[in-house]
Length: 159
Image (cartoon, rainbow, N blue to C red; front, side, top):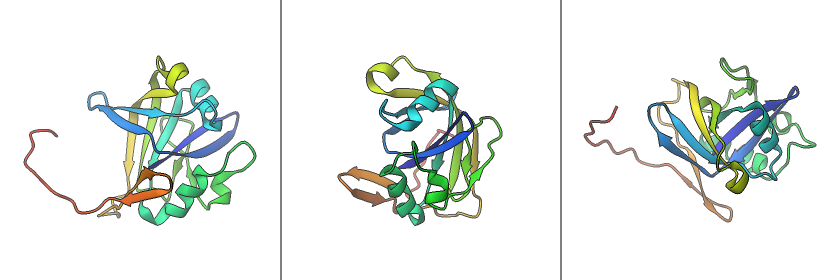
């Protein structure tokens, strides 16, 4: 699971995003589903930019809290103790407490109206070098989550 941040008309918002996937390495593309019912959908559609913030398991309560509330009437940064940090290439903020952040621009919206599917191009990536073994949270559905476990290294020609 990740936390997607947007900013529109001077208001930053954060939402929990569980439907996302890597699409391409060069250029780096990520696909994600943001429902038209979500407050963040309008900001993403109009500004065509966002930040994908990758939390670790230590932020589980904040991740679930952001997913169970709407930013229409609540400042989720304040409510859940998250720190917005200015991004370099987009208006949406990074989240200081997250292990990594990906500044993105919307590259394709052809599937947005029908499925809420956005294709995002990663413009800038940030990672906390102090976090040596990040344990990330993964949604399994119906309130069940899995924490990333053991790392396995295998020979690969991919970079």
